[in-house]
Image (cartoon, rainbow over all chains, first blue to last red; front, side, top):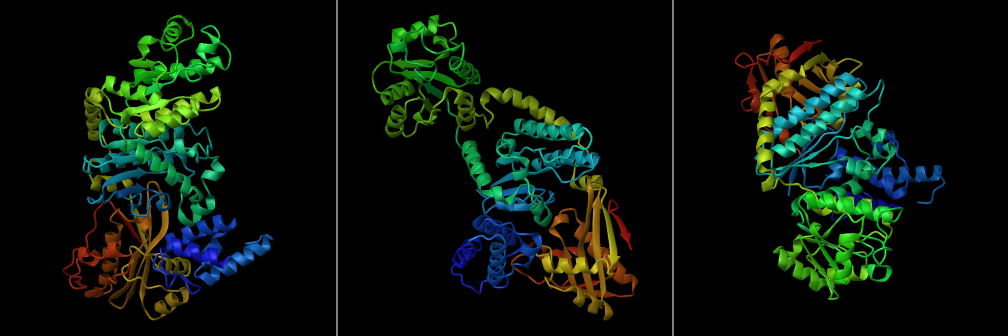
Length: 79
Length: 514
């Protein structure tokens, strides 16, 4: 899951390198439009439905992993 | 090509990354540096049918206004509007009529301007059920008129449309005969036994021929390249009662046993057209492959495996190769007539310039002081607004409460017009005589509201006895469009003298101070 999220972040925000410290603060292209695109890419890649509140709270790589882990656990899905 | 997209909803995700976008429903600026323009307005989300119809009809007039401003040498692509989203409370007939009028207006513009191309959005939307096309979640969080999950198929469809617009219309369709214009093999089955007319599958080939005849009438040359005995074929053309296409339907033919690549090359020479003007249709995959390899300039579509697929195949042929996107010389006379009509329509327009457009909107601007009800929204605006944000300082609700206790003046802005209410979409925060924060949501830009708001804030400060006010612009990666704002308001070196400043406001803005 971590690698998939990192590669989504890298491609979406056009980063040369990406690691676990990636967050909205360190990433210039992670703006509101970026946030929307990120939510859509994550929904597609992990086959989950993210709620508006959850999308609003995703501000870093760590937030995303936490959220996806929770979503996948609740739906008994392997991610 | 860097296109500039005029839009009323969030559509960035659907277009290539290097495209630029207008504000929402914003026609106030037409960037001259764009290579081309796109007009992509979607049906607004609104239950009041009267307002909705007025808004849709207004879009057509706004488009005419924009078209009158752009360089006529640059391509301008218009998307039709899909009414699938509408909620038909009563009959829905008015709304259907308004959308139909809007689309008809776009069609008239395509005919009146040679640089304008119309793309029918329903060609894309009809592939999806309404529930897949639109997602209320993304409407509410991002004002998206299509589900963002459709951005990839949309981008593919749009890229193909752009190719079709760029490529020239093909001139000649070269057809095979056996199992292409009729079912069966003439040389084996005989003229009485080939399947044409009557019951299926014969009626599918008959309908296909009727379509091809219309294609010929639209100006496409039909030719034949077939491995057959020429005498047998001429006999079918003359005698078969259900043959729609006859010898005089074809400009030329090669009916012999030489290979088809040679036949097609000879046809091109005879007709004096380039191989790249030819589309070759043949049911045999091996013949298709031979021509693709020998004559790569010739377009060779895959042929359907079942006769009932022929109507869909003909439609795709027309859409891909034979649709008219540019006005040809033959249409010139007609075009002149359309132009005259367009001009007449122009003089009857509700607004002839931008001021008149703004006046027609009946804009109402409400400015109210911060209170417990609007502080959450003000904090949210400071957190989220990037583009028209002069200082980009992010504050929490408790920050704002503390500023108020310290005596800051904080106002928020609400805007409505005859089409609806956008709610609180701007705020100004003033510490003594220094403007700390000034921002407007990009949703309401393009109507001059930022100037009204700034001047009203300055007037309110002046009423309180303040003589000079300072303000600053802090550049970020996102707020370039606000860089010249303070100067345009009348600030010099970030200072304005309120006694000397022009704080007047155009009379078509109705301003309410609460």
